[in-house]
Amino acid sequence: MSSRTFFVGGNWKMNGDRKSLGDLITTLNTASLNDETEVVCGAPTVYLDFARSNLDARIGVAAQNCYKVAKGAFTGEISPVMIKDCGVEWVILGHSERRHVFGENDELIGQKVAHALESGLGVIACIGEKLEEREAGTTEEVVYAQTQAIADNVKDWSKVVLAYEPVWAIGTGKTASPEQAQEVHEKLREWMRANVSEAVADSVRIIYGGSVTGANCKELGSQNDVDGFLVGGASLKPEFVDIINARA
Ligand code: PGA
Image (tube, rainbow, N blue to C red):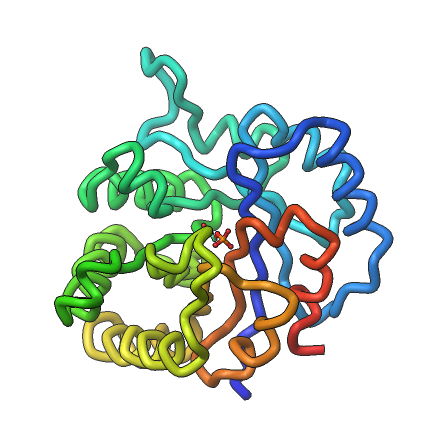
């Protein structure tokens, strides 16, 4: 097993309210969590302050998106300085729903990554192929191109977690098999070795997302190059505790 700190992110997406998120926060605050795992919860923008004020300090908070500049006439957007002003340390960028529902492209995601890092946020940067791309045998090509667009904008990799989330596995109940996840993670690490550096390839956390559950997390998390998870649906349930403790 590697020396990389296991990282489990929850992505609440556009779900919850003060009552249900408050209950979830109480569950997390009172649970016994593996203290060797780094945990971060991605809250909806309007609940960032609420999540940060109520979650235990040992649990990080992430925004689910941000814009590429600090301020200005960008109705509806939020900036990294605002996120930091709420005491929040992380942002999720390039999520497949941002890419495929809201039409964000590699260029914009790269600009957002650069600005978020310059502003001092940690970035959970998401990549992943669609079903038709996997079936056409272009998974590697797709994820390498997405990773390149991110890597071009990263100076300090210690603040970046790369999330491999095959689009066909997100919210579908069709989890990648441990072998499928390991295969892509290993290739991504080799890509890092060839295109970034040996040191970054060895240290960067590559986490898996796509229908991770309490039932499948242990096997997925035991793969050599799977350094944690980004969890959607199951992060809203008490089962998230089991996922945090996958390696316990
Ligand atoms: P899911 O979502 O766990 O509900 O598949 C994962 C994600 O979108 O990060």
